[in-house]
Length: 110
Length: 115
Image (tube, rainbow over all chains, first blue to last red; front, side, top):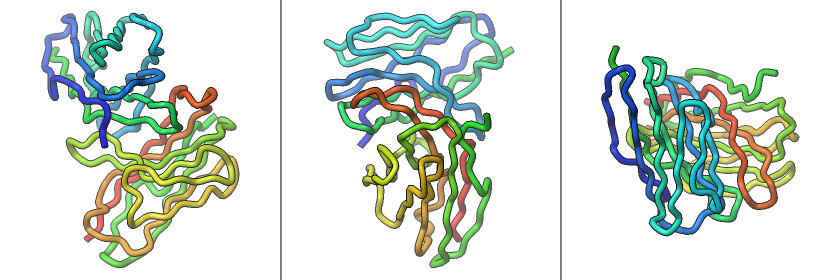
């Protein structure tokens, strides 16, 4: 079963705007990861945040994690056309498996 | 480095036919995975291999078998394809840290259609 659920399912923004998407999960985790998938391609790892971290940055990406609410958010600042993709959160629960959500599809309009 | 490679890229099968999807990684990772991706469903784990010589079922293993041929290669076999197995299949690899995860590296996928 899917542990993570992203919200919203789809997001359309203007180039230069920020995009925020959220991920909720059900059981305790070791870490949470975010991946990007461009149309017709494999997933690419963006960022990993461990359960004892609250915020992490990587370039224009900012991820937060609230383990008390079992939720995470991914913020993309100053979006570009190249950010058009689907974004997935993935959680691991102390075994060798990741559980992926259904994803948020982001469209950046020029 | 090629990363994770998958063959074939596309395949059309008739119901009942069999085929093997191939996956290889050149990153010396211990763990390898097979996922399927269906519209609106995200990725679902079919089988995984935590290390060479071991394989375990994931969330949706029925109708599939796997072989961890060596550390580099992990194949997925459909013995008797069914239309419900129409999907995009992704192979991935990673180097776990203890029982926790590091990032997974994905191949480009195999788009399979079963008629």
